[in-house]
Every structure is written in structure tokens, then in C-alpha cells.
Length: 196
Image (cartoon, rainbow, N blue to C red; front, side, top):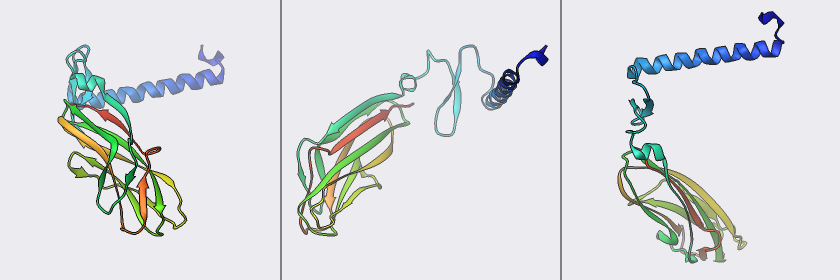
């Protein structure tokens, strides 16, 4: 009977049969590791390296919610940079997580500009997560021509249960010249994931 079907239909059927076989293999491997589920259970990650069967109605609410918060926090004032880190006004967020394996994805944009140029001075944007300055930085270098540029950086920050504060900070590498982080394009965008 299949000899009368067009070739493209036969290819699709063969492809679907292969996909079903792959799915059966993945399911068998999952059952081999986790054991056999009861009706209505789903496999969920319980940490970065383990998983368990859970019934969706009794699974932690944070797992089902996933994305707990999204926010955009624009600067509320122009910051004149110094050689010490300073908070960028308005670019701060405090929140509480219930789960032990949450994380934040943060993007910081810094609108750096010299008001009195000095070639070679770097303006540096940073993220402070609770009391910890994150390693990655947004860096702009003054070229001596009074240029203005918006630079950005992204951070993924692991977070446990409890209260947390994220904030953008900025500084410069030399006292020479005068440099600012402008209000207009300086912003912190945050996605918070609350996971058990």
C-alpha cells in the first residue's frame, strides 16, 4: 500500500518514525535514571545536576512560575564619575526569592560622555549584586575628542532564597578630565528567575 504514496510523504513518515524512536530512547534513559513515574508526573530538574519526578499540582510554585520578575530601571540623574565606584541613581532593584536556585539576567547600559575630555581615561560600568561586584564590566575609553557613547554589559548572577539587591555602579580610571554617565540612555534591565 505504501508503494502508491508520493516520495515526499514516505520521507516524512520515515522521519517521524525516526523521531519517535529517538523520543523512546530519551524516555527510556530518563526512566533508567529516575525510575518509573506515576500517572501525571513530569521530570523536573531539582538542581544543576539532578532531577526528579514531580506531580505538577504539588511541584513548587516557583518552578511553575519560572520568570518571577522583569523590570527596567532607568537612571534618574546624571552621575559625575570619580575614581571610586558610585551608585547610578535609579538603577537599583531589591526583591525576594523563595527558591534556592534562582538567578538574575541583568543588562546594564551606560551613556558615558566627557564634559572635559582627557584622552585615554576609561569610564567603567559595573554591577553590584548584593555585596559582590561582578567581574564583567562595560568600558568606554575617552578618545580626546569629546565623544559620547552608550556601552553595555550583561551579567547572569546565581541567587539563593532571600532578599537581594542589584545595582549599577560607575567610576573612571583617572582623575584627569570630567566624565559623566548621562541620565538619558543609562538603564538597567533585569529578568529574575525564581527556581526551587
